[in-house]
Image (cartoon, rainbow, N blue to C red; front, side):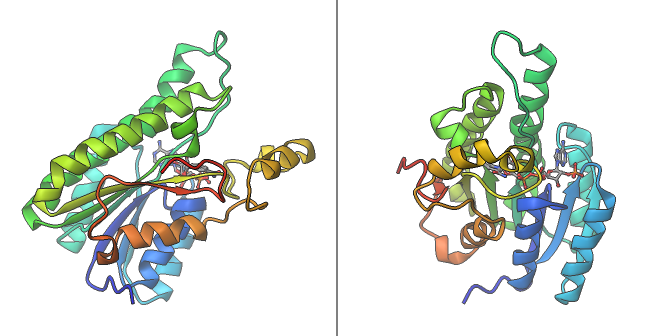
Amino acid sequence: MIDLSNRVALVTGGSRGIGAAIAVMLAKAGTDVAILYRNDTKSANAIVNMIKKLNRTGLALRGNVEDYNQCKFCVDAVVKKFKRIDILVNNAGIWEYGEIGRMTHKQWQKTIDINLTGTFNMCNVVVPFMKKQKYGRIVNIASTAGQRGEAFYSHYAASKGGVIAFTKSIAVELIKKGIWVNCVAPGWIKTDMVMPEYQNLKIRKEILRSIPRGKIGLPDEIAGPVLFLSSSLSDNVVGEILNVNGGSVLCG
Ligand code: NAP
């Protein structure tokens, strides 16, 4: 039912975890997919190979979303290769411990720069192309932390709260230009990012107790909602923050 043939997507942080699942699911729906990653070339190439096996074109681009010029270089490379860019998924992010009163300015800034400024950088570079096409879909990945806050991760929560406010703002700014902007806010998802905590039995129990569904989510369970927001099935959805968290945070 969802057919995104002839569409072109760029997924940041598409080499691993949630971003990799999004890239592959978009390819399954017919999209050619470029992924942006920072370090892990082996994983990025593996995802491109999976996209190719689905008879779609894949492209791995190495770059840091913190750096505006690198974002511009990557987007230019996508447009050069595919001649268009229909879907942008701002998924790249970090989640690092930081206790208030002890957090260094550098720790604070790194999280804000990657999670929030990185999202701005990519949107600011991609939007002119989407405006020219009179079509685009932007899906930003936030977090339950951005909705309800997160103790010992205040920089992360602030960055994701910023992504939510940024999403709502530009969604209204851009919808008349044919560009949809929405957000998915995941709860706990089983990826490398959270494995050190999830493997600790005591912490795992606490995590599972906080989720009414009683289980941690899987990357594909975020990719599905992103696919929906990338398709015409969500035409009347603008500036939405979609809770995808097993019931742990309900703010509709
Ligand atoms: P992950 O497994 O750690 O993967 C992170 C991805 O982002 C990797 O592809 C990584 O590339 C890339 N990346 C990190 N920093 C980057 C940068 N500066 N520039 C470009 N790429 C960068 O993370 P994940 O769990 O899939 O999380 C994906 C998104 O979901 C994040 O925004 C995260 O905050 C959000 N989220 C996750 C959870 C969860 O429980 N997992 C919950 C809520 C929200 P390299 O490997 O090359 O560094």
